Length: 170
Image (cartoon, rainbow, N blue to C red; front, side, top):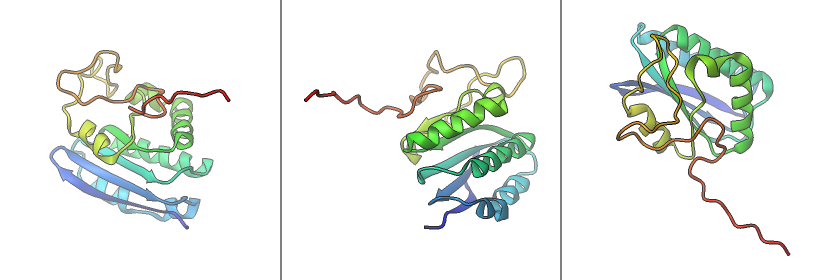
């Protein structure tokens, strides 16, 4: 199945831009998509959040991941406060975590926030933002839970909230 990507405003207050990826994206599919830029520009600098739905994709080619992360730079420059990723693929989580480290994204916004479901990721974004550090966009580390905030994955968690499975030796 050829992959597709689409973006839309899914909530007005706080503004949340939903980015949905279906299948395996190709470089032409992501570079030809204009709706994310159009939605972000329509917010005219108003602070917003980004919700990425990767529940229907397993991996992305490296060049597609890199373009996606450049899209984050575009969003940061235009008022993105934070983002959350609904993603069930541990491979895709590892790809994005590595690219976030290499690109310096983790230092600017904190660790990527991965969730198993779109509802969990959306709840995280609808919650009030954590206090910022010294006037930067960087959030405090999630070492201390925020009052009344939904639980979320730590910076390197591959399966947020997934139960551990007993291993049998046979």
